[in-house]
Amino acid sequence: MGLFPPGTDHLLRGVLGLMAALPVLGTAVLMLLARSPLGTAAFEPVQQPVQFDHRHHVGDEGIGCRYCHEGAWEGPYAGVPPTSRCMGCHGQIWNESPQLAPVRQSYFEDRPIPWNRVHRLPHFVFFNHAIHVHKGVGCVSCHGRVDQMPLMEQVAPLTMGWCLECHRDPVPHLRPIEHVADMTWSPPGDARETGRQVQAALHVSPRIECNTCHR
Image (cartoon, rainbow, N blue to C red; front, side):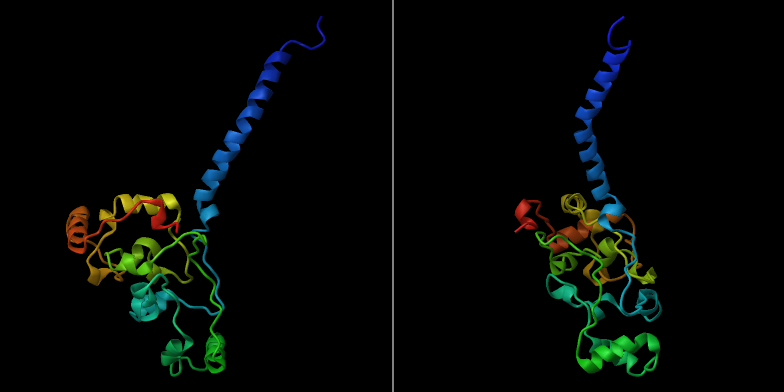
C-alpha cells in the first residue's frame, strides 16, 4: 500500500488546475463586474441636497433641457443652473417651502448648491457635450427618460465599449437637431433611414482613434 491513498494524483491535478485558472477567472469576474450596473453605478438614484424632481419640472411644467443645461450646447460641460435661475420661479412659487430653504440660502448668500454628480467619467477621458448635440445625438440617448425620474440616475454604462459602439455605428442614435432635447420624439418610419439622413445632413463621421477621447 502506498503512502497516499488512490485518487491523490487526480486530486492534486485538480488543485493545480484550479490554481492555474484562478487568475484568469478572477480577471474575467472583475471585468464583468466593472461593466455591470454594480460597477458602473448605473440605475442608482443619487440623493441631492435639494429634492429636485425632473418629473415635475420637465414632464409637468415642460421646462426643456437647454433652459437649465445650456452648457451642453456650448462646450464640454452641461453644468447646472445658478440658483438665481431657480429663484426666477421660486421667488414667487413655493417661496416659503421648507424644502426650498437651501435654495433661498444659496441665493442670498451667493453660494452655489453642492449638487452631487450623477454622471462621472474618469479624469483621463475627454468628452464634449456640444459636438454630440450639434451632430444630432439626443439627450435621451445617454441620459434616458429624465422626465420620468423623481431622482436623477445614470442609465448608460458610460464604458469605453459603449461609447465605441455608438461611434462605430451612430446612425440609430441620430435625430434632427430640433428634436435633440425632445424626450418623447421617435423617428417617422425607419429609424436607420432617418439616422442616415441626419448623418448626411450634419456630416456625422465619429472618430475611433484613441486620442479622440484620451488626450
